[in-house]
Image 1 (cartoon, rainbow, N blue to C red):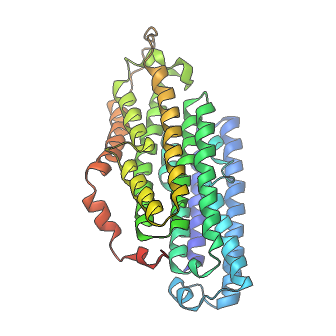
Image 2 (cartoon, rainbow, N blue to C red):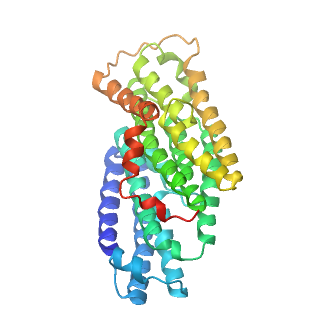
Length: 352
């Protein structure tokens, strides 16, 4: 029921706002209020779309909608409103403006949850509606989503390269990586959907690992300024290993889950004759390599080791490393994840 999904979105948004505000201080409260306003605006768009859908079809049950929905101006408006609300919550370019400040102010575990799970929930709802009944609408909408995804990949990667703080770099990287998921909409084949979902899984693990690593660095060093990371290299080897392994997945290098997801999307773009999406995949990989190696280059300088005596609990370092290892192992053990994506075969409904 799409109204029950609205209730779920509200609960998810309000709890995420509270988590962002946990750090306290003016910056955290401002970021949380901005997130709250954006979340409520997205929910309002979604609810208006639900109302139009009910007026046009007479039901809110997804299975019934799949049978009754027909292209009409009212349904186009409903699809546009629902999609706008969900894209705002997903932080797809150019509706990503609330995400970097929220990540910059939130505690590292909160950022890990937001990047790995919270923004993925709205994407999941959009994907489910698309597979069920949105595809009956104008096909130009799929190309628009793909274009916004491509712009997100490029814009997010460029902005990540420009950042001087580690958490902001990772936040803009999230904007970029989310764009890959939307490249599957114009492709629309079973292979593309599997690639997008594989990207979703691997990104969740890798980005959570990155944010946990950034939190470890900030807790140890007292800051997350990239230019001053050289002095901590010898003190946090597991944390820096976790960051590097997560970076491998974000760049799409083998063996990693990110590589499998990008390979499936690239193969889908070539087979469908839409090769330009493949170029976006390659450019995004180069940008990801740029901002990951930007951090690693500063880390492996020959600065004098810091004299700080802060000791991090082993669980903080191992949790980041464990998540990063999962992101890599997703590329080595692909049989079970791909078999799970075959369950129910929802992707066979896409146009090819």
